[in-house]
Image: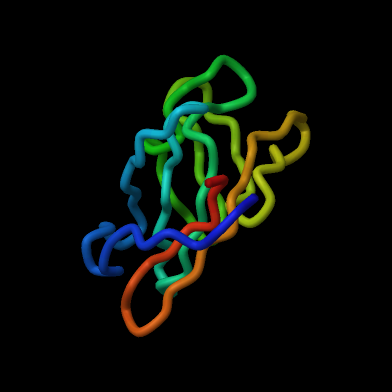
Length: 104
């Protein structure tokens, strides 16, 4: 069963940056785009497991710091010509507070 969990205030996530949330299934990277949209992905590039949380956020994508793969923040899908996927998690902002939908 999944439910919404309060993470932090929006301004606690750097603009065009991320915050890492430890999780039993592996860390989750929570990203804040320039337009204040938030996204959450498993903090592991599907290529070699690089920390996406340390990547460069541009638009609604993040570039893995290890080998330059681009990952769509909305879906976790890798951009062509590469291929792959990392798990994504629903995220939202309500009254300046970031929430993630996670397993109980």
